[in-house]
Image 1: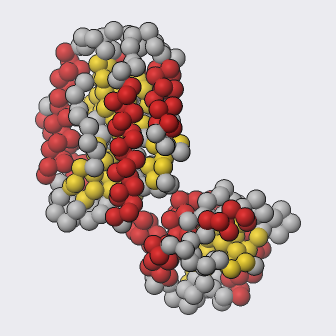
Image 2: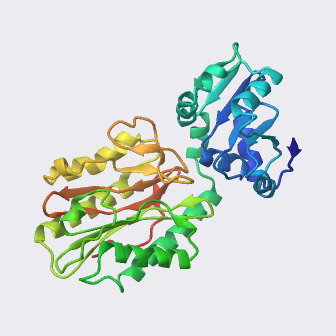
Image 3: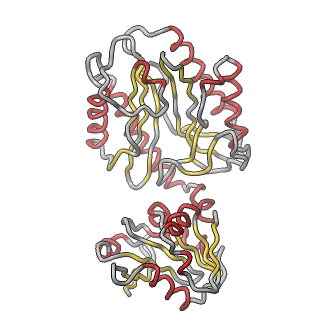
Length: 363
């Protein structure tokens, strides 16, 4: 067992916030890499974090011991696991040692551990339940997180401006995506946040139309949706470009989508539910006759992960509160013709949204 010392107060603050929600006989376990980074500053593909009321255990294998020693931003008790000394056995030993009667999981972690039949291997008197306490902590961003996302958006937007001088008829979507991603990496992006969407012509009616070998033609609308990862946080961005003269129907729905975006950004208020905010855009698009062609939620939170909770959709009935960072991304998709989606990243302040994205909607 190796002891690590505190390096950055923000990680200690997050751990303390979580520990205040635990009593002496309760612990919290997560295997989600984003959760583990959020609480400790550590990364790795085989880490498991157990937070007790007075002590924190990180279970890992030999591949990550040195890395954790360099990364850890809080005091950790590091337990090495291997093929011969399993995580299940190591966890069981600790739960008995710490007299843990209630073990709480994030829902995604519990699904993973049930799949491994790990939960059935817990001590007989330890009860396992799902809990959203860490989700609630992660959904409220501090100003450092918000500024990191904002800086990542600057790189993302610069890439979109750059690609406007590159794109032309005859290039494939994949060729444009390669140029876009190369530019992002040159500007400091560590990775793309998700599979880059560049969908042209009729393919722009596919909400998740990842870049393909399709050739971009004169008269196409080209839908862009991409983001980067830098300093462990994501950006997310959608705009459209027109190549030459486009179908008037596409110009019409682009204006409707822009108006819906602005409507939400100007009128959503702190404390409204995700369902209520979604309805603002959805009702407007429906009034314009295109409600059947807006088939996804209005937006989602983002941070360490590209898709986080809370959501802006037809079922999220919990309030959107101060310092939640979300996307606003209405879209209209007309099969056989094309589609339009515009996306901004916003942060809810004490009264209304602050828009972090700073890029025109113009074709």
